Length: 114
Image (tube, rainbow, N blue to C red; front, side, top):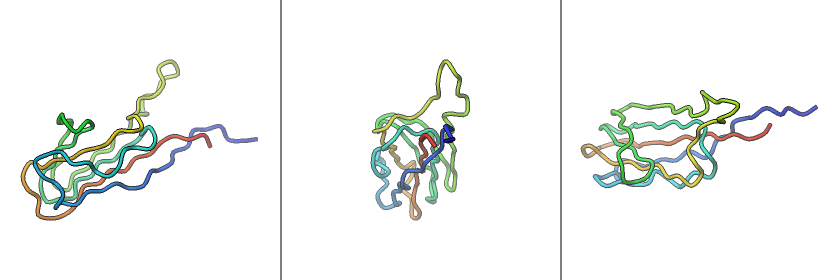
């Protein structure tokens, strides 16, 4: 008998070093290959950063050393399904003030049949 549960799989880690972050939005790696069910944004630079999911609008900010876990599927319903960030989305970052060290990271997980 096979297991019909939904499993999580990880996409490769995306990152952007401090020297590539300016006052204009820069892409953190490549576009999502799969719809993201869980995403972790990490700011391991020495300054506050602003993140965007469209490269134009400010969506959230993280302090130096800050991180956030976005669990889009935690409130799944049978009739409504689960929320997710669509495949093809690029996560962007810009500085509040110029960082002198570190990187920002995006980890993302998607669902597969297991």
